[in-house]
Length: 348
Image (cartoon, rainbow, N blue to C red; front, side, top):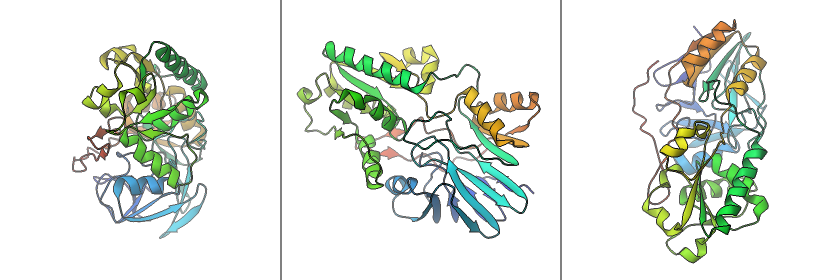
């Protein structure tokens, strides 16, 4: 029996009797981060990082939550569990599971470049590593973050000169906070969609310092937004909500913008290659740093990455999970992120 099994409810540790990021309700769930594909409603108890707790409360409501810090260990039955920075979004963590002489690490989602708000990705040595592969193809190689930030600022300045409102499309949790930091040097008033406002308030309640923003409400006028800056989630793009920004230009912030055709398909005026996931080189560097004897590859281009690792002499196997939908948030008219369907059958 493996220390962590791949079951129809999610990643299960039998000696500790807990699941990691389960996609069906369980008694004990350890959560790597607060994106909706990893943090699902219905479990009896949740364990997460301190910064993730207010985000789970905002998204999942009242539940039994316990939180610990990075590099802090707890015992669950005969298993030692600790959390380590994943660098993906604020509070995101890898889960280290140690039992007898065996160590496994579940990465959740992660990126290796430091964004200065999400914690610095920490390689953790282990016998078995479970990795994501969202951008697990050699075509995905990110430019340095500061270069992207400069492009975003220059685009905003050009739009303002042309009398257009800049609407930056970014996921409400993770990407939106990085875009806010990118815009901070401009010292302009920034308006946000309700979904981003909700996450902003949760982060402030956790004591995390963020730039000031103003929520777009029915009382917000066109004059308020004229030649201004707005950050909105993907679900708001092209919706009636956007009409009050006219005239406006749309900039998509996503790793998928690496493929030029995606800018055209999204009918965007600009695409900024900004991702909260590791690129191809980042994935390989992170995997090698673990010195893992076995690597299990989940959501993304898992077959390609798994095959490549085997060719490099690292034992690897592909695992199908229900992760990978954090880039497809559904936003309703009130600005609340809709939950994903938790009843979809797993293919393990």
